[in-house]
Structures are given as structure tokens and as C-alpha cells.
Image (cartoon, rainbow, N blue to C red):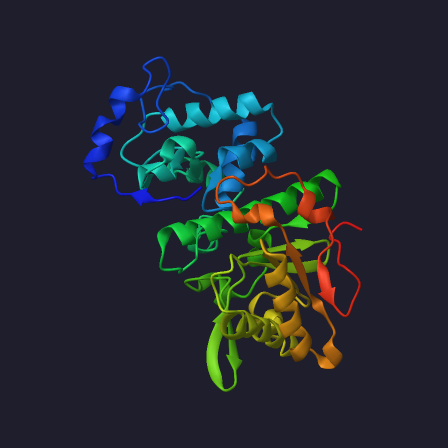
Length: 331
């Protein structure tokens, strides 16, 4: 299914209210309700907290992440979004308030943390009120020119990262998010405009590398690179591989993030593309072997907004390596 976005001022949408049932609240327009709505701990942990780490998450993703029955989480998402507020001073925000897709009736709502939700998390000490928290949200830093391509890439990064987190939680393994890592990072990293954009020098030129997601399992740190197949392997992907190798070899990650190890996971929808990237790494790595990079191809990742709900599968599936046995995040 193709996806096209249309700005709010397009006259086509002026007719939309007439075809929306009056028996249920619209998911396109807020309605005043819930002035006395009480925010629960489960609202905070199941909805607000993951949204403090991701730029946007779908209803499907939040239902999979939360501990309540799906119907309850879905209902709460609607109730929390419809709570009245001044302008954008709400608990939740939705992407369709900024961007309207032509086939929006077939697309899940994409939820974002609102001002009041963020204030609540800060007041409870769950997140810091410093700028680096917002500046490092997963799925919020892509610079791809096309808005739809950018959103597809960002959604893929959040889908995989959230799935891995769910898998580790179910296995009762220690998980640390990028916010946990940044709390202990250097002051230079936290004060940077993009805290996860790690500076590096390649071939005498200063550049940087920024993972799509960063997390830790126990004492092992992982960077996630999501590849939609829109970038040149030879010029873009190889440059990323070289940059990752350099920040580890030169100790830059020790100085910038205060971590002493890093494994990079490349995810792509195409098995052919996965093999091609692995071949390039084989030509770069010493003796054609590298334990630092893991690769996984999943055709389901090609379907924007129609991906399988997070289940923890990426934490248990094998990530292929060049010259080494497959990597499994959960042994």
C-alpha cells in the first residue's frame, strides 16, 4: 500500500466530518472530555514512558508494550488524547494533527508525548527535563528529504527497538535504554544538539555517525541501523561501517558515551541487500571476519505501518555475522 501525506489546509478534508459517524469520537479531531480523568501508574509506564524515548508509536506498538488488556490500552489512548487542554498542552499528541495522509482512514494513529505528559514524567523523576531527552528520541532525527520515506524509516527503527525491549523484558534480562546510557555519558554528549551523533574523523575529514537506536543488555551495548534500501551501499552504508569501526578502535565511544564496547545491528527488509552489505564488510574487515556487526533481513519490515505487532522476536532471532557464528541477543 502506498502512502501520501496531505497538509491540513487541503480543502478535501473539509468534507470529512460529514462522513464520520457521530456515535463515536473521531480520531481526527479532539473533543472536550475527561476533565476529571485520573492518570494511573499504568498510563505512565505503559504509554507516557515509552513515548518519552520514541518520537512516535502506533496504537499497535503501545498495546504490545503495555501490561494491560489491549482493549483497555486502546480506550485509554483515546481518553488521554481527548482530554482538554490549551493549544498543544495535552497529555498526548497525534501525528494526524500535523500531517494528514490521503488514505488516513486505513492508517493507525501515531501517538506522541504531549506537554502535560512530559511534565508529569519529569515531576515523577522518570525522565530529566534537560533538552537532551527530547533531542535523542528514537525515530526523531532522520534527515531524509522525503517526509513519507523519513516516517517509514523512523517507524522501522522504533518497531525493532521496541520489539527487542519487549523480548528482553519477557526473558527477565537487564535492559538499558539510550536515555540510561546518556545519563552517564560525557557532558559534551548531553549538551550536543544531537546527543547520539558521535563525532569521528575518517580519512582526515571530520564527520559523525548517529545510530537509529542505542541500548544495552547487561554490560553489552548495541547500536541499531535500520536500512530501507534507499541508500547506496558503497557510498553510504560502507561509510557507516567504517565510522563505527573507528569510534570503537580509537576509543571515541569511551570519551563520548562512557561505554567501552559496541555491537552494531543492521536490519533490512531484503535478504539480497543484507548479503551485499555483509560482502562489503567482508572486504573491509581483517581476514574477512568481524564480530562487531550483526545482520538480519525481514521482508515484513518493507510494509510501512503494516508491520507485525512487536512480540520480542528480534531478541531471539539469529543476527548473521561475517566469519563468526550467528549472534543471538538472548542466548
